[in-house]
Image 1: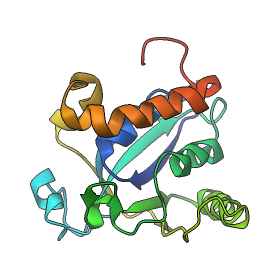
Image 2: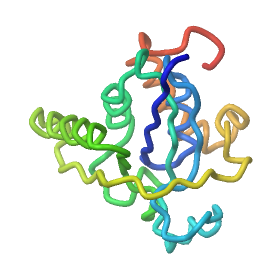
Image 3: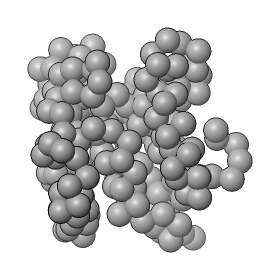
Length: 183
């Protein structure tokens, strides 16, 4: 049986990130939820206040024999703006911050190395503000957030915000996509 690993990241709205990462080869599951919360099992309404300390994030279960943690982080940084503090586009607040919540020393090492290579290459004109901190907790979001994009593609938010991210993924990471099923 394959050994699966888990990555916890936050890079804005979890509807967007779930839609992107679930399309990658080697990704077993993507669960939207709340990372690094000061409140036990917060609700979406609580997280939206910005007072829980939680970030909208995703828990990615993946097969490292098919996709590496480093590749996941490359895509993570490429498909959002890691230079804006507590904001992604029109989504503003600490719950929309950019974060990597590493679970072991190897994940920490890889996250810091990928960030350093992006900074050395001057990939972004502004400094990367992504927090890279130890994993503390992750709470699964309410069921209606799961597969939100796939279930609501014609909603204005999905068309205006998520569609461009999915199109960018399809164009720039076509060799990393699942063969069929999830588009």
